[in-house]
Length: 271
Ligand code: KIV
Image (cartoon, rainbow, N blue to C red; front, side, top):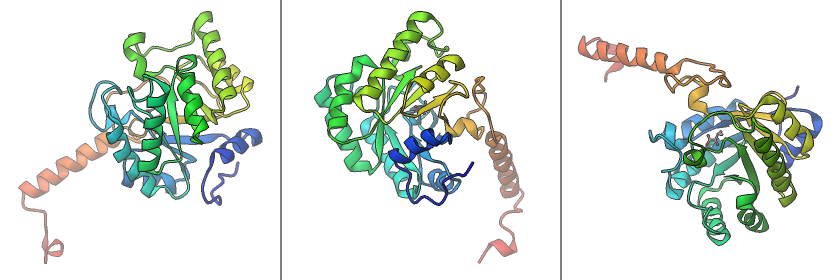
């Protein structure tokens, strides 16, 4: 399958065409300029400035503490790096749930100040008024259903969602509502593969899965998990491509040893 490497900038239309043509969409999170430069060069279709920055960048236990200002800072760095990838940002917790006017203000501010190409919001029917208002302002929105980490204290657990009939049918209804409202795509997190497949087949817009099975139209992972920087985090859905934690730890150990033993710098490493 061609990787669309020749395309100048991926747009929401490109993603729709990928679904229509049966080409899977590759998305990863990114939070800083250096990593986003490499991932853009690697051919990622979408870079998500996820509010998982709260966990992996800032060390918080949940995504709740990250602020709009902090998300804008991360997104500006990613936007500066991305030449081809579409850049999306999570609207952080507390900036859109209050009312739709607050949601629109947050959306406009984050789009204006970051230069990103679209937003992701967690939730279905409960946030539809906000979604409508943001879409009316011409801002592309990706929905996010299934496990929605901003509601972790309501769920009480990071377990798989949509396993029982009631949850699965609410998810199907919310997915249809988000598509009807005009969302350009839908992220599905931690749901049974069968449900991921059903939603993807029901919707015309692309679905992007994380722990939602191979039937989704694309996949996303948190970059720090995918390259093995988050020590000890190995959920079933994660494919870890590198063990960077160990590699960096070993490099750090070698550096300490070279400095202490006066082996660094050597003659060719000084002026
Ligand atoms: O913030 C995040 O990293 C996400 C994941 C589901 C990709 O939203």
